[in-house]
View 1 (cartoon, one colour):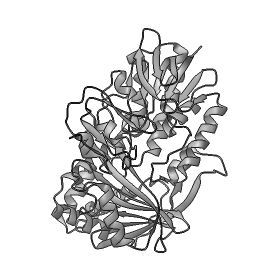
View 2 (tube, one colour):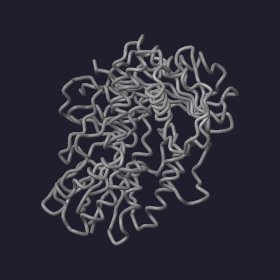
View 3 (cartoon, helix red, strand yellow):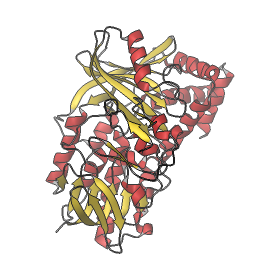
View 4 (cartoon, chains in turn cyan, red):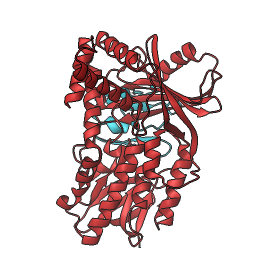
Length: 58
Length: 401
């Protein structure tokens, strides 16, 4: 299971999470985010998101 | 054969303007992940008249939405308005980008839509760009892939943005009778947008791009929630036409070039550190990237040293002003609320009601700074105009930069 969960209704594909990701494991497609392997669970993507679309998968 | 001289990643202002600056004799490919140039619009769409005049000499520009000449700065319950004739305008970003694309195509560039760069590999005499639409080869790459830039990192550049350099934004397009089509509004009240500001940019016909940007490190509530609350308080009757999120990253990358690669626009983190405006610097850096591509292709030399011409050109052009803006941004983000109160009270008092004439003012803050500077100079000349020691300290800092 991926560490980060995306609420696709809320995600505006603005790219902020991609910019702050220290490992560059997020890739923004035209209609969704792809989380690749190598996440270090720093939660910066969750923190930066303007719409609260990202959360931990629990 | 999927071989090109230059592959430009990203069909936004930086990439498209770069393409227009590359000589027609070179084979240029622009790849764009979306299915249409200019869409979706994630932008507040404001540019200065100066930017327009610098980059568009031609008449009848199809992308102009609305021109404004008044700027109002709000801070808590205070506000001040100044008039700067011909100050700036709102563009229709969708039409703006399409206009730039037409120019690039006329120059001979090829645009591939629905094409996302997944990876890029530097080889001895070329770069391979892997996309969802097949692999392409080029002698060099211009990465203009926006705030969500991915490819610079793949080619070995340090592109991670720190939270303090990131503005988390949310914007509505609203329609409301209270909107003045001739006035842009900035609200720096820290309770709404810590480290950033709330904006209302008039689109004409009583509609506006109304949004806010919060420094991601200082953020307490999400922009989506803060904007909702702000609207209820200040534009309760406004009709929301569109709502969307956005992010602006500032503080240029430590290195914006590599062997066979140049980074331009938002991908190089070249948005204005105070206003967050990205179009002007996207056109500037994109233009230089195109010019440098001509040089290195002609000489067939893509070494790190040769590519560094790009850095020199960009720095010479605007590094000084960006550096000052970054210092001011840092200064403002480190101020306590009490210090901010004093800073804004003094600044607002200074320019309220003044009519400032200058076509050189490229942004509100620039004019604010210029006003402070001018007043600071007056202080030096007349000796005792200023009574606020704190403001004086700031003026002195600005003057000494």
